[in-house]
Length: 78
Image (cartoon, rainbow, N blue to C red; front, top):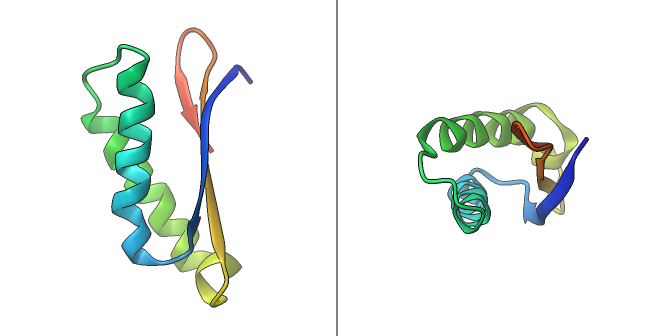
């Protein structure tokens, strides 16, 4: 899967989307990546879907975990 660059657990609420975006941006910026618009859009979509369509968003104590991996060629967020 690649090297884990970072991980964050956030409350499963819509308000956490901007925190997830900022976190992924900061992790990737530290690795030298500068063109992050597409990545931020994808993180927003994935996080929003997790909140809308999973127990993470339905339960008051729900959590969405964001992990950022680098396999040498691409960066992956799960």
